[in-house]
Image (cartoon, rainbow, N blue to C red; front, side, top):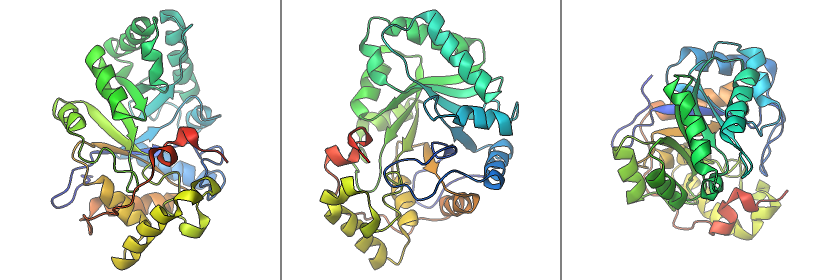
Length: 298
């Protein structure tokens, strides 16, 4: 499968987000946990489709274990997981964290490890942490190491300091747009770094309609109304417009998609396989306070 369209960026990889595999997720919750049949179908898609991967984290309660239970030894090289470190961590304790993920996931190899809290790289133990993670790369257990970030500056500064970092995740969506034409990220992409976009549906709030957005986001209701009007004017679903926006980002090579069912995944896959319908997006965008999930409350 090649994910592309006319006059748009090629999205090379789909990463299936797993935060809701074992729990309700985000302030835009739409369903509860995945059912067993859909979970098996999603994991089969990852196993048999070279362009599809799993995105997870140690902090997603029980999800690594769930993946290990349903697809033991079947997802080697196809899982990207995130770990959270602290200033007390050492070379040895970081090694142990990764080994624990491998054990829970029941896989021999991972596609990547992302540091979930990039601020740890400002601590004195940063060199030790990077060295321990890179040891897994040199041994062939992990393909790439990198960061999960909220600001492009975090990526740019970290990559300058640590050339071992090859893969990065960052938030971006149609009502944010802060990095759409980020030349620094475009340069990193051209240099071979892998940049992955996440939070493209704003944890579901872009898909549920203006009247159903989280209470926290209601002060920015006009932004969501503007987005809704754009969808109606072009006779397109919010899902389609969200995905078309991501495909116009020149530096993006992968996208994390959260889904509530296998059917929803197939709809996303079909959109990514076809041409875009829209390239002009809303002028109204969220204040950074509202677009940053670290500020969100239930």
